Amino acid sequence: MFFDKAYELKDTLITLINDTSIETSPTPAVKGDVIPGARKIDVMRYLAQATLDVIGLAGFNYDFRSMSLTEGPNELAEAYRSMFQATQSIDTFAIAQAFIKPLRYLVS
Image 1 (cartoon, rainbow, N blue to C red):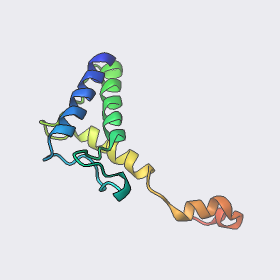
Image 2: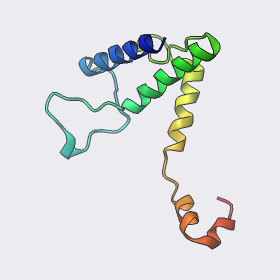
Image 3: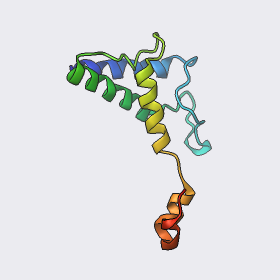
């Protein structure tokens, strides 16, 4: 099961490299990182999708097919992706609360 999903992830990444019509990252590449003929790919997104697929198969005997580029998005896979995107956003107030003790008592 793990090897099957690893090979599917490899195939998905190769498809993303070769097919320029598919959006591979929500942000453009930084100017200093641009390589002619290369593409920026949000690998963490696809690793998270592979993880969800493995969890679904191992724990629930259900394939979410979240790495599929041809099928429509799976509702649970989209919720999983948006949940982890939300945790990666920078919250300046939370950072200030970590360093300024009186701010810890305020509700954000």
